[in-house]
Length: 301
Image (cartoon, rainbow, N blue to C red; front, side):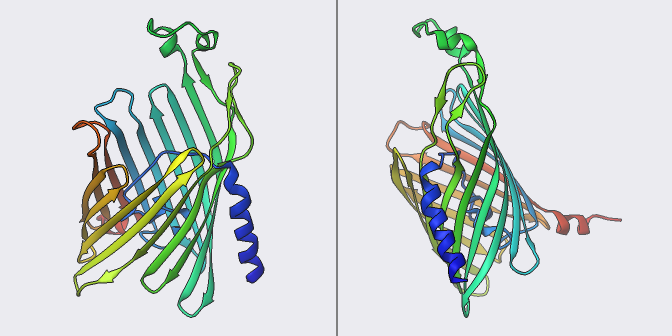
């Protein structure tokens, strides 16, 4: 077991230099799988989540992200999951498909570590024609290619999650890609950026109905400033919840949701950036979760 842990740590260090910054998603209070793939099969397993996120409100061409994810427990120590992500920002579009495998290792009584590995494919496109037809831009031969699609790239991420009673802490190097991304037509390419995510949380059971779960998150990477997030969600009767957060850069967020029907989860979150003009660079995210097997059982024969 010690050899497995050592090999995994070496992989984390060696693969980190190739990671790529990908769309940012919230809603991890209800879908922890969106925070780290190492959560596969732990919280809200057997649930299909559909997420829609809009960033930079008030800015034309701001990021819009769609995500479809599912995870489940397989046998005693194995978790499986999958994610489909489609993101559009102005002239850029990107698609990511990843399958996840996790394995749980018990290192001591009530102490465990879940190791996660995700593999899949990444592809993007750039619509250069949008600026070629804009008279405010200088003519560039590269712009005449119009929409240019990248070649399909192999992508993966690697993660680990430590759990002890009500404590959870994890590390993630997300969406790693190997080599330079190139395009079919234009002579363009780019190299992936390094990025990582660290998080820790603790669950307080306040009484028989109320609980609180504060979480701290650090995000960063190559040419990406380190960002700290402090959040807490409050849950009533394990069915309804509210979330508050602060993120460096003057960002405040609120969220709320619940299991509105047996097997149906809804969550909404809104972030406001106080360092810029009102109604600019805010974000909205709507998440719908369906506990597939629970929902099916509730339907009449």
